[in-house]
Length: 351
Image 1 (tube, rainbow, N blue to C red):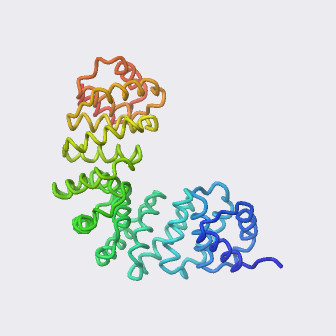
Image 2: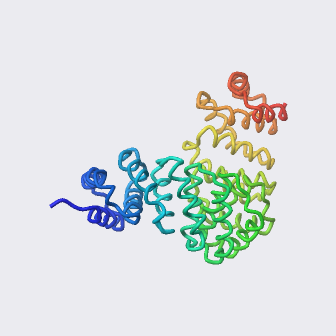
Image 3: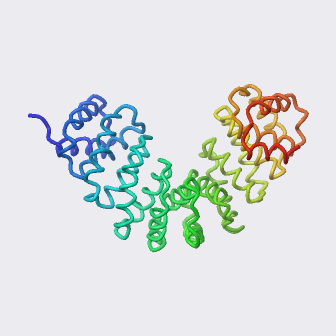
């Protein structure tokens, strides 16, 4: 006897809760569910998305199912509860699969009407997902911020970090709420993960919101304890943010650069440029590390894009390293590739 829609949802949900990924069964469920989506209720649609996202980080394996769920969800969105709305958005973002702006617009409208019933985790997951999906809706952001303001005392470190990160990506400043987020984060800073620390200070820098010396010092102290767990991008974002705020802590920079040396092979050209920019702004010149950065930049010259070229050229001039061999190669490449006004202005300021 074939499974009905509820059977399919319950089965894949159960495997997701157990963190067990039976690939053949997932393929069979995806194929069967696709033909029965009309019979799925809102919770079934949301739970199916959540399960596939939990078991599989990318959505290219099941594009037909994910597209089909988006179409069906659009028809039934008025019956989605807050958890269904948040989980659906989170799942599409986690799967790196954009369901289309038509669905996201309907979800945003539904959230605005039901925002008073969202839990802190749901609010944080929702706004994080919208940022990952690059969907910006002013009324949604205002509503979520209003709701967050009233529930902030229940936000955990990950909720706080994800909310800050989302605001930065969507270029939305929530006004006085930002100060309250900083106060709440300061209370639980020791519970932040290394990624949470990096994402938070990076977001504050992108939003041009200075949280004050006390907060930055506490973040620096906490990061120092967890520095070996930072990813390459985490190290870069952290150093970049502190450089943006002009906060130089020698012990912190020594730790960051020591860790960078162990992970330099995993740095992208943009990572190399942003890190060099941060070192230049802080007037911190680690000779041996800079030699390795320059050597790696030369080996990866063909991978440089305009923003990284402009940032690297600016930084090398600031560090009086414009006579190193790779500088001329970067400069020659920039004359062909750099055309954006922002990048051109950065190079002009350097020279």
